[in-house]
Length: 375
Image (tube, rainbow, N blue to C red; front, side, top):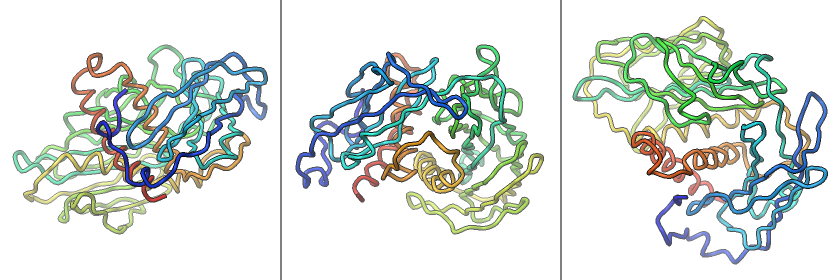
């Protein structure tokens, strides 16, 4: 598996620290059904390491009686975080991340899996991010990243009634072009466009998953109208255009955001109802669109929303508190899931998908390195 940095790279923070004591990642694998939990024995459990330089599986085993499992990491990486995962009915489930300092909580993990159902509590849009670039000087078009944090408040993993059936959908702005699927928490193969809608056929376990799509607003589209076809708890809108104006129900101006020297006007709104919309009107303007800001913006937006997600997240099975922040949790889970998805390597992956993977991975690498250095 490819590393997050070049061979031999070692952060200065790691050089200043001595070797850590062995880390025990131990706990129980349980199935949650309603208010009850049942231990699962004989199931494969995998331990992963995620650091600024290396990430990937480090060990695996079968859960024992009572669903118990234990990994002893003899020489844990002091710059890394560790995650435990399992597959249940073909769906991946992950623990919270643990650092070598997470001694007590790492020894009492509750790794929960869920039964599946094709009906139940409707999925909700917890946070929706819309990021609009400056116009391309060559043709005046604007790149748009549309990122939805989709929540499942129910007690079961939502799956389609048949293979490939839609589990969640979202309307797109009318008139957009060049639709692509971005790297989120669901496989790109499970997301497609049908007319002015995005259709997702991936399973949704209890909790939140991120769906990312990209499209282009052509020059002749002078107003981008973002439809909200379902209740949305929070909207975050970033516009890289000082002359653009945004309007919509409850939309408020927030502090601007500067990423890689590029300035974005920022707007927010909460508790938006189905059937509402937000409109962004553009004025003729020359700009210089550079796509390198996109991956950085994606990472920054997702992490900025972590506090909001934590405040409304559904209760998990009883487990000790984890000292990592919700932002660490979301970041590490995304890195592990992303690398597992592309574990077959470049030769087995279409070139455009591999390029998207590398760009997303670079953004996550930068954010992870920064967070670990600040510890």
